[in-house]
Every structure is written in structure tokens, then in C-alpha cells.
Amino acid sequence: MILSLDKVTKSYGALKVADAISFAVPRGEALGIIGPNGAGKSTLFNLITGNVRADGGTILLGGRDVTRLPAMARVRLGIGRSFQIPQPFEKLTVFENLLTAAAFGRGLPEGEVQDGCAEILEQTGLLRRANVPAGGLTLLERKRLELARALATGPELLLLDEIAGGLTEAESHALVATIRAINAQGTTIIWIEHVLHALTRVVTRLVVLDFGRVIATGAPDEVMASKAVHQIYLGLEA
Image 1 (tube, rainbow, N blue to C red):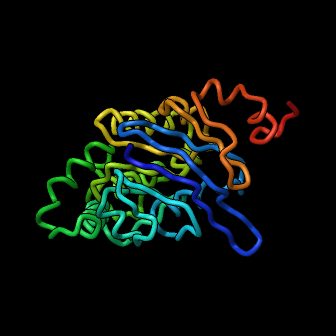
Image 2 (cartoon, helix red, strand yellow):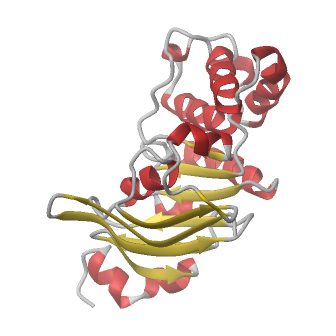
């Protein structure tokens, strides 16, 4: 397993945002995380990446206990992440954004990561925009840059946070093709997404969260047909 969570908990006062969450992710899998707003999805990512420290439980990355490691240490161990709202360095070019992410994420001199950055730009469809300041990108290009910056850190495990949100259907299809190719090359993916038609074209398993608890897990068709998901996630009576 590349990632294992065992009874991971997190509370803010009386509010429990992660309630004994347990699941494991095999290497190479594409796993989807769904749930209503406030279910604890982004908190889960923050716990995995180390941006938020768990109150209890254990997080293993490739069999190594990373529960108490800081975020940068986890990046160096192979966790990459995109954020729901892209926040590139807008005055830097697309290439400079990648170069910065690669150098800091891998702890290497810029000269040693330049070639890899060029390959990632081609992979994510941004090569022709390499010298454009990030502040001048379209929404799809900004999302592609967010994905590219995460890839630039050299992750074995890639966390995607609602990367398809706000895109047109054609843009969503293009992004899905890129993500599927990344997964096919061996990168494990965990993807939080509300755009279900995009998510289910990539992932082979879904985990459903509600109020910080895992309420369902399984194949996408089975999960989406379950009464619990209809009741809690879709807001329908069972």
C-alpha cells in the first residue's frame, strides 16, 4: 500500500472533522473522494499532506509512519497536491512556477530539474505557454498549471482537490484525459471532486465522507447506487 490511514481523527473544539477515518490505497490506484460540503474532504487532504496535524490515529506512506512529519517532509517523501483554488506566482512565468515547485519540492538545484519541468509542461498541455506570466492564464490553464506544479515535486501519490470545478464540458474532458494518462504512467491518484462525470471516468473506487466519517466505499457504480449515498450525499430519501 502506498497510503494507509488507521482511525485518524481531528477535532476543533466540539466539532469533529475527521472521525476515526480508516482506508488504504494500493500503489497505482485512482481513488475518488466524494461527499457534501463540510463532509471533511479537504481536511482529509490536509491530514494526509501534513498541513493539519491529526489528533489521533496513524498515517503510513509506503509503510512509513508520517503522522507527525511536517508537510515539506511529506512532499520530499512523494506526496504532491493541487489546491481547489489555484494560487500560482502570478508575476512569474509558467515555466518559472514549475521550476520553483520542482526545486523546493525535490530539494535540488534548478539546473537539475529544468529538463523535467519541460517534460511536465508538454504532458499538461502548457508547453506553448511556458513563457507567459501565470497571471495571464485562462481558468483551464491555471488548473493545468496547478496540476503541473504538483507533478513538478515528483510525487508517487498525487492529491487532486476539485480540479475540474468551473470548467466547460470540453475542458473537463481534456483535463480527464491528462489525469488518466498520469495515472496510467504509475502515479497513484486520490481525487476529491463534485463533477462526478469527470471523476468516474478516472477512478476505480470511491470513498464517501459525511461529517468526517467514511459512510461508504467501493466501485463507483455500487457506491452511487447505495441508499446511504442517495440519502446523505445526494439529499434524497432512501
